[in-house]
Length: 316
Image (tube, rainbow, N blue to C red; front, side, top):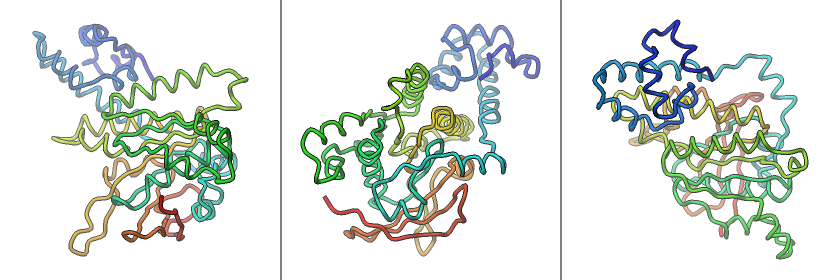
């Protein structure tokens, strides 16, 4: 993203004083800005003589981030995605059949559903499949202590011996993350690692990034008037799609549902702004205590919405 100095011509508020203030906190580009804890930055601004102007600059930067990071797509991009992206098996034949092979590399896929609908189980099964069948690395960003190594091991082929199971499990890394700024730090490290990867390492390159769940990181920052939270949400989506596209990674995130009370239909959380970000949105639903669940397409780059299938995840 652009250095802050490049923004001054069209945005006089981003002047030398504002840039000096940002530089004192290690912020030199738009990307540095969105990776910083803006609550702390605003608190530091309050201590300055020109606090009001600095806070106006921070607000302006948030609007610039939202406009620059808004995902764009056109028919040609969608056509290229459809023909060039490799599908990674989810390990579940029903989901693979619906998605014509599985989750696509280079795309951001979102699993939406209420609690206990099977979102985490699909994520864990996909991690086992990619690390085993595809021999790729998996990074699982766990925001709610939902990752279970024991459950992943159960999804690995029962015919595998202990050495094979150990090798597959070694390709899966779990990173606990409890706030969006820590997630930005992890994504920045992932970006650096992916860029510095050698050809020799590419055989076991990162192929799947899971964030379970993205909504638990974003929902807490959407309070108040929502301007800062909305900008950070859009920036998070932009970074995830950028990682997916530039490094050919399948990105899988989960999101909860809201509403559904008194006969109303449940809908994905995070609102209309987030709705446009994922390439693929899938809605999961499951009867309580049942190992069968339904997967329905809400959005897809190469198939109509509304298609659905029944799938099974065996109980642990």
